[in-house]
Length: 196
Image 1 (cartoon, rainbow, N blue to C red):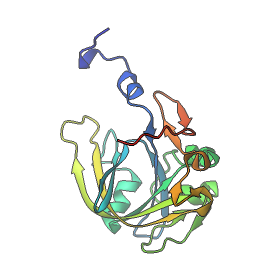
Image 2 (spheres, rainbow, N blue to C red; image 1 turned 135 degrees about the horizontal axis):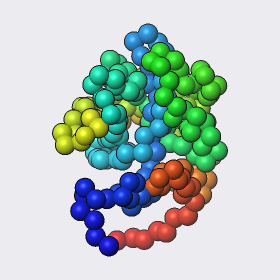
Image 3 (cartoon, rainbow, N blue to C red; image 1 turned 120 degrees about the horizontal axis):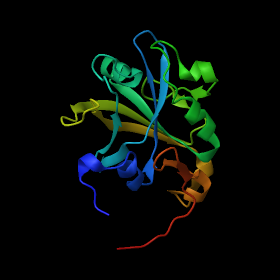
């Protein structure tokens, strides 16, 4: 079955690009209020220097931007927290759209810890916290939802020793969550290693 773009059934495209890692992004606003939200358009884009990107989507991105975008524009800082299976319920709660100035971290009692180099807090139940400074925000020009790609330069990472083995991250110990199509999620628990 072939579909031209305008005839794609709802969710079929996103349901095909799987699994997608989840960036659980913590920020802080100019008023000091924290914000936490998950994003599944997320990827590493460079390793020298280490840089990542995630995409903020909104039907009205300029008139009613998401708190994450507002806070990053103001502060230039954010933390990407990797979501282990044990934090899935908290991550799901944090996807609720709250009024600006209301903190998901406070509302849902999500534990945090002080980040090392930047102001936004890291999520304590995440075994990997990636501290970033803003590199650029790019408009996805043809997006009808006003998508914005946020590119960050990694300034430091905290990695819990409990997920490490022989100096590497052990996927079986981390058990990171990933996004599937529609309303589905999965856990990465197996690695097949090959050397090129």
